[in-house]
Image 1 (tube, rainbow over the protein chains, first blue to last red):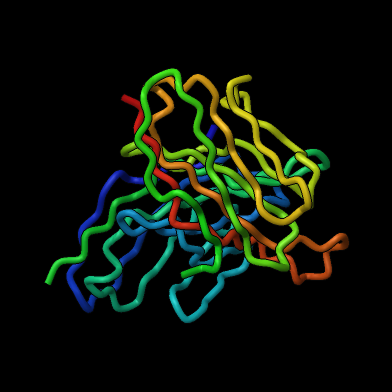
Image 2: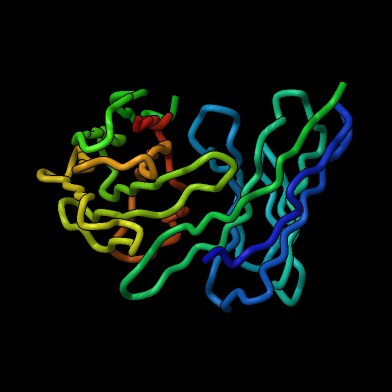
Length: 112
Length: 120
């Protein structure tokens, strides 16, 4: 079962920052948070990941709360091409498993 | 294009028929995953391989499903005696896992475009 909960949908105006929240209150100390997105009819695409520090790359920023129970993905200047389903994922990793468990994601609609 | 290739992209079959999907991962990737995705849902984990060894199978993978990766390169997912409930997108992903965690293991999975199965 997914270890994350996300709002089912969000809207954002083009050029504005999109802030996508995620709750992962049962996350373990060594489990990473990953974000992927899926544009219609394509496979999921990696965005960013983190453990406990904030992370930034060319696509987005990831803010993880100090208690690690929630995080926010930030797309600083959303474009129409950022319209997609965004998945917040906890990577489940142990001696006998290593996989990403997807939830149902947040459908982000960027409008002009 | 991530470099992960899946074939066929679309398959329509009648209930009871067998189907096989193929995944060609990025060449140097030693780990390969299969996921299934139904409409409106996120991808569900099915199984994964480290080289040619199948390390884990989800309980979703009934005995009608079998996956192989015979030479540690391409993989096949076969569904026998298909049912209408098997209709879904089947996604393959690959990645490179190091034996020791030297910080080079980003955990990034590279997904293919998927194979869409419709069972009539």
